[in-house]
Image (cartoon, rainbow, N blue to C red):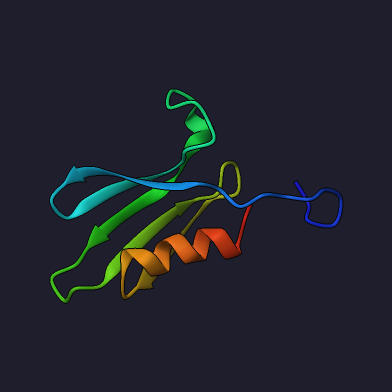
Length: 81
C-alpha cells in the first residue's frame, strides 16, 4: 500500500513476550491468527540494546537496533506500512 495512494493509519503496536528478553511485535488491529499481524521480533542484547528483525511481508527482512522498546514502537508508528 502506498502512502501516495491511500491514507494509512499507524499500527497499534503490541509486544508479546516470548522469553524474558524476546518479544513478538504485532499489529493489534489485526486478528491474532493472521500472519500479516506479525511485524517482527525484538531481542534485548547483553549490551542493553534492542535488536529488531522487521518482517517485510514479501519484501524481505530488515535488522535494526534501538535503545528501548519505546523506540521500536515509535519506529513502527512513523513507518506505517
